[in-house]
Length: 345
Image 1: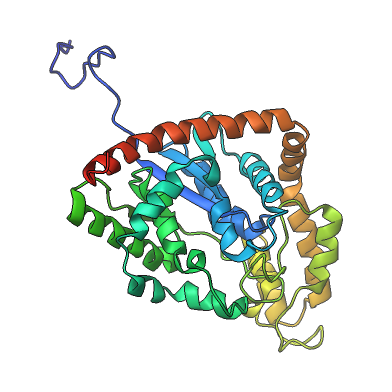
Image 2 (image 1 turned 90 degrees about the vertical axis):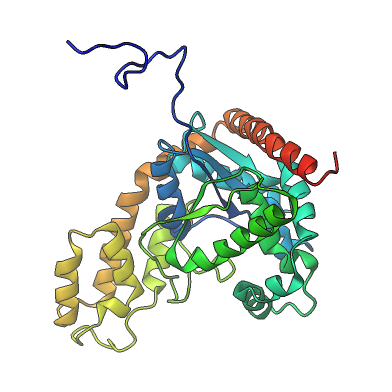
């Protein structure tokens, strides 16, 4: 019989020993419009998997949305609530995950202000998305908010002293700026803010219905709040392989948005569909009809959960209030360390 005396690794006394600290994640989405299938596959499903292993703060960053919607904020609050409904419908458990509305936690803005004082403008001007947003949205006179977007993003992450941030491979360079800002702060004031590591996630990359990047600003999405009728209306208008002009023409499925969705939502039937398309046996109209059925079947249980959550606004309010309380408690610890390190308190 093995000895279970103190000091033996097999001995666990909850009064004297504590569980290892869970690593912390902060990840978020903007409140610039309704969430879509790309958000579900690219982030939400991954968050649901991570919430058992990590201390997860799932943000809805309404302040970020003001960088492009400052002239009309009438829909921001509604977008926030719709996003929260989608978070819950996707499977985030509010007992495990704090769902955080950014503007309800003042420490986000406080740390952003302090970090903006030490971040060189040149760092921000080199961020590729700054130029891309200016060009895509035709912004002639960009605000500081748009230029300083990465600083606010860094504050969002660092104010929780997050250990890791889940990102796709194309997002790793964006996280590096957060790490640089943390390094600069720590060099100036002491080792307070940990440099978050990237947690690479692999997911189905869904194109927009028009073949471009899926984006709320392009309105080329199937939204999580869409109905079966919306899906049946949108799918027939999807772009397909431009070289397949007639039903019997051989197709190139790897260049076709319809096939990308089919592969994501019915991988078992995708090889047969691909072979039939390449052989000219499957026309685009028939394929789109199949895809609409596949998407509706895949999303039906999600839509049912979503409807139930939306029908109980009091519960939603309670979840958001509790998430804000937990986030304020966590971020207050960080800001106490930051203010003292900067000798401002």
